[in-house]
Image (cartoon, helix red, strand yellow):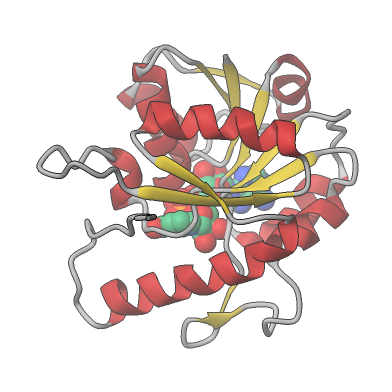
Length: 209
Ligand SMILES: NC(=O)c1ccc[n+]([C@@H]2O[C@H](COP(=O)([O-])OP(=O)(O)OC[C@H]3O[C@@H](n4cnc5c(N)ncnc54)[C@H](OP(=O)(O)O)[C@@H]3O)[C@@H](O)[C@H]2O)c1
């Protein structure tokens, strides 16, 4: 599939790089070829291409949003998605690792509001980027879980296949309003790892009887 990445920093590059190695075609969606992260990504993986953001969206199957949350409204309001899947990898983080929207609404629902013609799926946010660089845990018989949320079932099935390519088991947590709770899981992970010193390569698993 052709995958477009708006934002190719820690998170965008880690996901794009893994998926390129699994045979997907990666396009950096950027209006600034001279951006440091864009240049670094192109140096690190010469199979990536670059297009303007709107052009990349129009010619890709899936669009990943991996930008600072506070930039999202300005970025998204300019764009047309025409029903494309928009994977929201962003998290609204406030002071002292709090929820940046005071837990009143999820960042993903705001993303959906700013991109009303996109099918938004929340994914790839419950861990730090370290677990997106290499998601294989070969010493275990269970795979790490990737929890997703979104209103469109078909889009979630598509992202589920992307998760499989990344080495994750998918857990569909429900509609997009569940993203609020996924964002709190992020805060839990971030406080444990970035503040309290837990290992960044720990992951969650889903076990069911
Ligand atoms: N870091 C983590 O462990 C982690 C894990 C899960 C989710 N997240 C979430 O993922 C998102 C990205 O985090 P990150 O750590 O990957 O950040 P990052 O390394 O700083 O990368 C951000 C990317 O967004 C681009 N960008 C910034 N402002 C932009 C704008 N106005 N228009 C277009 N592109 C813009 C940057 O391009 P330039 O270089 O040109 O500025 C860069 O490519 C955040 O919302 C974060 O909360 C982070």
